[in-house]
Image (cartoon, rainbow, N blue to C red; front, side, top):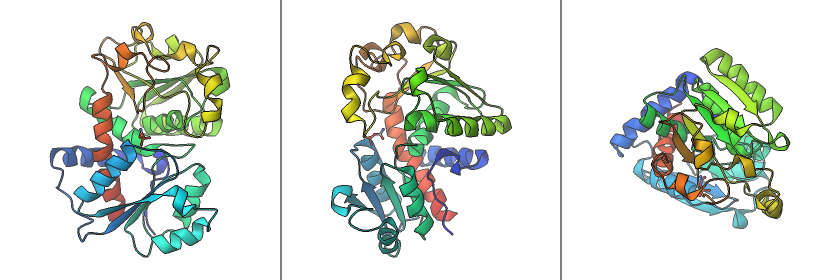
Length: 309
Ligand code: CP
């Protein structure tokens, strides 16, 4: 049985800490681990747009000694041209691991159920666990620790990033706050699961529709686009004059309520003037370029961990 990384709570708190330690070691020495030496091939399948994820997995697989193979989801048409199960049976006889960015979480779970090699979630509608590992590594670098810190996410609380911050942050023992309109709050089952994890790690979960209450004294302030991939038809409502997210924009006024030494994060791509102001994302508290780089190190760490497991 292979281990998979489909959602943030697929790693226990101990495993998550070990993966972050491994990521830090790989950042210090990019070629310290070569589990894909051969080279063995890793399939990178993208049904949605990408820059950072394709880049960091391509570089990461190469640095681990392997050969990345990008599959354009429009060509493979997984689930319509042929079943997820049949695609997986073809892939897992030839590749060392499968990385998939797709829509429904149920689809990647189906792939994992049929796969003899590790399957990694490179973003679904529900979760973006690789991004959260990179974010936790970034926070640890800047703050020296994770447990006990307050990490606030403001914006669309119903999207994949909010869900992954809940699960990944709780696993790390953080106090996770979500500030989002009542119409766009996290899925109840995910919030409950995060609270359950936090009860064991010393963290906590708080969900509010008050952006200032969410941000006050926070150590980390995070936001994400108001229009996630697949929601393009709703862009007018989400970004227009009546946007439900307008008062959750991360600007200087909102960040002023956070701790004086708070850092600001955004997984990118960012839309200045909407979810985040230019002066904040380009200002001294922003760590977004470290965050983008850390995708490489975090993903190498989790991929090599899964290959060993
Ligand atoms: N943050 C992130 O996943 O970036 P891409 O969509 O460009 O891969």
